[in-house]
Image 1: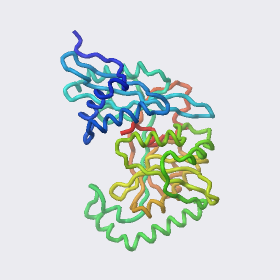
Image 2: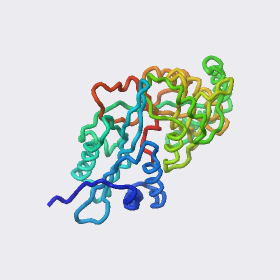
Image 3: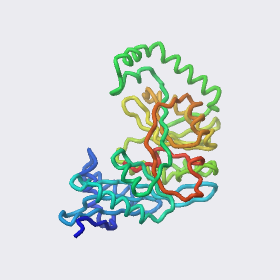
Image 4: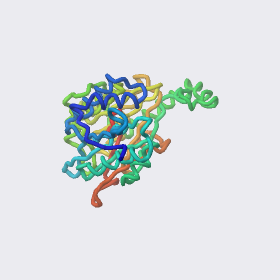
Length: 346
């Protein structure tokens, strides 16, 4: 008799079992936070509850594994369509052999009702997802921008040489500020960033005025608030970017960790060209809030990557590979703009 079975997981009734599974498999996550995750990430999703699947073992009680399809909506050429994001792939240690884990992934992929399905599998799950039929959509590109030489002395990569260079920040930092001021004068358009709160209605204006040629996830006020309220880390902040007349031009979602301002998402009018003034407005704002450097990742067109470089960012690493399934006539990846916004929410 087959030891394993996969069944639908109803998060309205099986939420406690799902939360217990997440708490067992995600470091630092307690059952209470995991229950909040189930509620916020799925049941509160503006696009609907999505689907979830449970792996069960005949000789073990409860849920041994789970994989969810988180509902998202993408927009392109003034049309909108539902997509699904692979999320919360968790299997208990006693059941992580190839057979049951692959069965769970294949079941979810085959049951997915949308033509587009994607995910950011980690190193251990990437092979399973590929064997289930998903193919590469590309890799996220990572960029960094120094705001102070002190950033070189932070983190595990801070070698003795880097720490020595960091000690010269008193001489170098004024030059970095001068460089940023020159970039802002040439390309910043006079835009300014200020603190804002998730859910504020001004976010709808840049979203409504988006570039229809781009392929984007929904970024209205309600969806941006949902995405970051459902993130278990709860340390994301929002910056509003206005033009010279005080009109909202876009937003930056960010958080500060060990002096690095990680940009989780950004969006605005006139992308991809508008990325340059958006980032140039955010840089002095982040510096005032204690950031020593900025970091961003995205999967996008060459024009968007050029606009990021024009704001003084430098590529420093290849990020995670995005795997997915999509129709042959799908406009990918030339028209796409994916950020951390499009990831799972933990």
